[in-house]
Amino acid sequence: MNDISAQTPIGRIAADHPLTTRVFARHRLDYCCGGDRPLEDACEAKGLDADEVMREIEREIEATRAPGGVATRAPGGVATRRWDDATAREIIEHIVAAYHEPLREELPRLVAMARKVAAVHGDLRPDTLPALATTVASLKTDLERHMAEEERDVFPRIVGEERAGATDRFAGLEHDHEEAGAALERIRELTGDYEVPAEACGTWRALWHGLEDLERTMHEHVHLENNVLFPKARSG
Image (cartoon, rainbow, N blue to C red; front, side, top):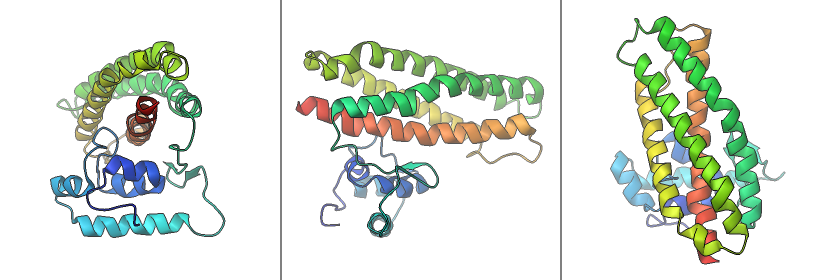
């Protein structure tokens, strides 16, 4: 733990020790868009004891040193590979395969379920279900545009000879990430922290589980871009 202190940026901790994202997810500490924030400041903003969080981080790091090695993805879906030692091309290929392609399949499914639940059960939750359907649909549109921009223009520049042209776009992409994060926070609010209502049908339950998984994977996805890929590209 000599490489971690209360002043270490939370995104740096997640990049160096991927299993610590379990701790950050547990306490809802933003390690993706808020990755440049020191651990101590992030804990203070959430009313958490930074020393206790540090102890939890230490336990997760010690777990990765157990005999038998570390899986690519631990139980619960936490990505465990250190990507900061990979090439930009390897990181991009992983982002597209592990996040972009699944999102293109999953987002339409979530939108369809959100609209169905709002149409069938909207009278039970008129203040949340219609708004949820609208928020999910808007997030789908924004993410699809964002991913297309990255794959069509930014990613090829990063691995090509126009890296400066790519880095000029990072601020805009990071702003998109912040907006997506705000939408995910709104979705969490509208779903009541994904607590499944007693009256929920099968589609309603599947929607809640799908949206919670979307939030988790989006945090991994954005972290990998903001805190690993973009800094690597900026440094040349």
